[in-house]
Image (spheres, rainbow, N blue to C red):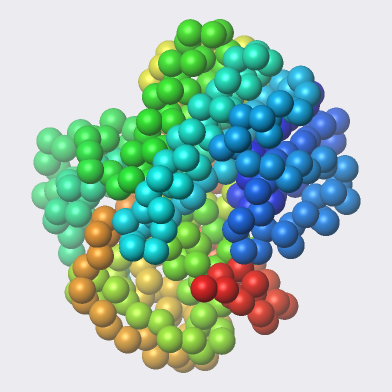
Length: 360
């Protein structure tokens, strides 16, 4: 079986490629990357050593995909993954849309021509910001948690397990979220119209060793590396105390599920093709709790308070992956503490990681 991975030299793409080969040595993997992400070049040699063929190209350019041979599956791990992309005054909204939507269209045309399965790694950011931003929360153990009244309310798709696939996707969801949501819809339409398998995996926050250290794209890596180096850190927004909560997921834990998906001949409904994947409530933690872990691991480091809110900030996001467990018997295999320790060891072994992976 030949699998094509986009963004293969990014953190998620490279980690997933290695994990897939660890599960099935008979896979032939090839990939494409434009290497515009700082740090991505560091993954090229290791992937090539595993026999992975890497094309230097850009999925925004249809002609760059012309050289791709017949493949059985396409895994789309290429994206601009920042919720602030295109609206922060530093990045282009047009480039965001070209990366995350035009690139998807080109890949769907490839799948149409090759009759290849398509797996889109989507995001929790497709869920509506307004109800999440206004979610009634309280602080427990230095972390936000939804008030019981919020969980008992008739809000569809919200429970103690987190946000499910039934939660609202009504805009606004950010430009980033809307490009991924539009990509999801197009992928499902292409698969239905042209007869190839499509799977939409909405992932929580990815984290692990080698994650590029940017606060808007790799918060766990950024925070641990910055704490270790005694760089300035700040709790931004809400009460300025770092009570915001996110879950985390190691991308290698996607590999068994993705293999099941691309090998599957199951007839699934449209809604069954869309699933959440995350570490869930067991992996969730606040920035304040992450700081406490770093203080114990590296020694105390002061974090300043910046209570001014930014666009699209939300106090709590935990994905409910019950549907993935029910349909695919999937569950995350890497516990939170193992993810944090893995990042910490990588930070200690790579003292210039932030300069390499987030130089500006």
